[in-house]
Length: 498
Image 1 (cartoon, rainbow, N blue to C red):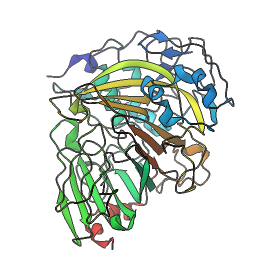
Image 2 (image 1 turned 135 degrees about the vertical axis):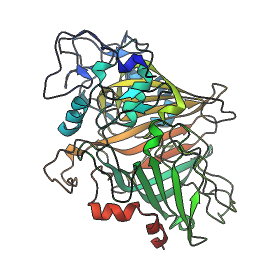
Image 3 (image 1 turned 30 degrees about the vertical axis):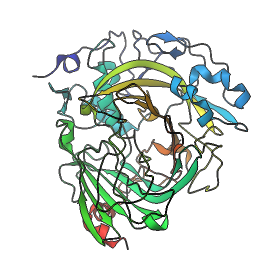
């Protein structure tokens, strides 16, 4: 039986439809409609007529004490407190540092998705449904639940937004080089890993209706990569396949294959606990690693999951993948909307990092992206509680703060079953339209791109000290040609890494 809260809701009352050029999505506050929590100010409105928003839901934030171009050092950081998540402010010594210069960027700039995605959202509005278990049925493309169809008091609003985040516009996925640095323990010793990674959307693409990637039948997306450094991790490669059945079946695990250089063969790896993008971690630290490990950390909010391989050794393993929070499994959580809040975030950063700039300074903790441009954005705050029991230090509750216009993750925090903080972090983005060298769509060079690429992240381990940082400054979201896609998705390609 279909749930009626979203499938049949008429949505908030309104006196004017969104302008035809921009099909349903978060609506500008200057539109003549009844106020709802997910309206956004018009571009450039640093002091919008309807005021700024803060938590708790419906609360007002103080006037912004800044304008685009203003710069702030560590001694002036208190001025920005109301525009940062509470968990980031509590651990601000990890993310901000003496000598930083934070530049205020644009206020509510238009980073909305391209026309073909908005068109698909409008054409299929009202078709997607939540089933009795919270799964998503009858989804085609675009945003499954347009903002103007989600009532503020709907009990399923949190789940609807979670599905929107999972199916947000991401180009055709992403690809590029990355470096993750694990700040080990309280002495903050960096343990870097360098590699290449990709995620390719193999179904539900709005730019190519009915598209199925070569060799990826019934898959939602395929991801994979290869590690290049350090020497002991070199040539480890993997492929992760997520079936479309995950939309309705919470028990549908991914298919995961990895090439293990020590064995010179590809093996299937258990993936039952993987929630987000898989990334291998390796034994590092107090003694030289003897073999590679296939552990991706414990089950967490969108980040790895256990994927064992034989004969492990070493002393310390990274807990996070470097790409968690970018993919959700909404069926594994009970989601609710905690509200909206206007925040500063480096969603369109300007300061290069690896691989363009390998020697960038990230402060004494190695986690600071503070010396960059931070935009004022309206964030949607989602809180998810794990269905079932998770003991120990595994994630039992998470908060995901996403940009309301693009649904790109911008902040994240998690807690265990004892309500003890596990970690807190931020994401760094980069706007495709400001990159003159951005690769075009291979099948249509004139097609819009309009993507926010995730080019960095920094997470602090609250209880343990240390944390990790990802840099992927040259990441792009347009795909390769189909002939190249066929090759990169094949498990057989893993054996060619050496």
